[in-house]
Amino acid sequence: MPRKTRPAPNTSEGSAQRSSGAESAPSTKPCAVDEVDTRYLQTLMGYNARRAALSIIEVFLERLAPFGLKPVDFSVMSTICHNPGVTSRQLCNTLNLLPPNLVGLIQSLESRGLIERRPHPHDGRAVGLHATAKGHELMSQAEQTATELELEKTARLTPAQRKTLLTLLQKIYL
Image 1 (spheres, rainbow, N blue to C red):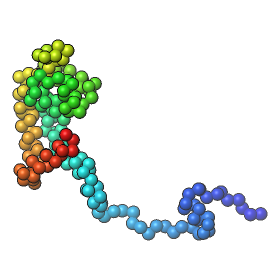
Image 2 (image 1 turned 90 degrees about the horizontal axis):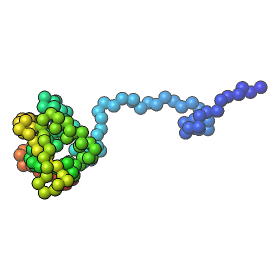
Image 3 (image 1 turned 45 degrees about the horizontal axis):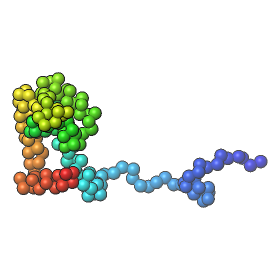
Image 4 (image 1 turned 30 degrees about the vertical axis):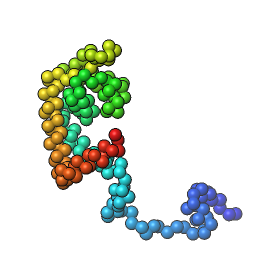
């Protein structure tokens, strides 16, 4: 009496084995890569922009930690410092932030004594955001740190190349 066998799994490899009746030989291809090929990725704008940003943000986080600022805090504080009286709505539009995310951030900055709310001079419903003296002092130091970091990370660029890079990146998102 013939022995019953379990059917081969329904895969192309199983089908090939059943049709040829032979077992497949082990692959002779190496299973390790000596050098990783990223030539295609290097042709992508997003890949390159993200890699450049990550190399800066990693150091940015370290250097701005003593100021108690994350990148979004830094952006909000810088915008408030350079635009006294800016509203939350303007911050959201300018920095591409969601209003619910900004609410807690504003409260945190206010509780740290870095910003204050004042009535808007033209819109009775709006509130203008202003940096306090403590906020201005903190941002003066934090912006100096950020500037030094950017110059360090772009040291291989000439000043003209740096300016061109900034202009080209801004053309993508502005």
